[in-house]
Length: 251
Image: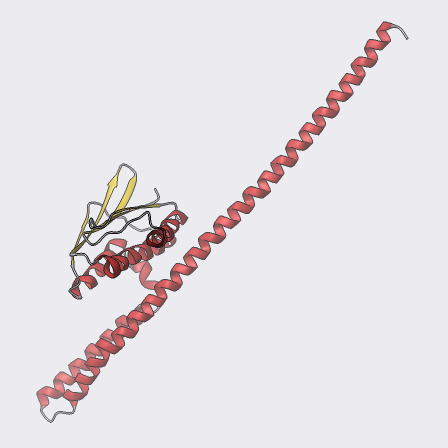
């Protein structure tokens, strides 16, 4: 075998070897790519599942709060109105009987209003600004504390998933302030800085140490809920200095 033939065999062998190596590399890359695709799909499915689970939990919580509110109204408000109507209608005086009829009409109006709250249709018809105003009016009507609401922008029509999460988070923040903070005033503001829309909820109550896990676990859950819609949640608080919360809405 002469040197020329040796060179030819070396070239052929090297070509086959490199060809095999390249084929192995390509197959490996295709395998890795498909594996990553499968992992990404699994992550997306998991995120979608968590998102849907979060929304379902929020809907259930809102409905449960609504039922509690309806039950309270039936007992405290409707019950008293019906007792009053019965008293008026049982009177022999025509003017009292007329008052009784007017009270019955008021009861009918109140029950109709409550019936609209039994499903989540009100979420579609209510803006976030209107919802905040309603919640603050309820707080003030109880005499619990003063409230104020300022908004330099209108959030406009939001997707239902975003609106549900915001409604529930705002409810939880206000409930926490009433249960734990004992503030003299709760202030809510909405503004826009560049492309970032922010809802700020501030109270001048007791405040708490955010580094204590038991104190911040509920807030952590609220943060996770805001993240499911592409938003963010931040809290600043210390004992004796109230609590400041920012809800950053997705762009």
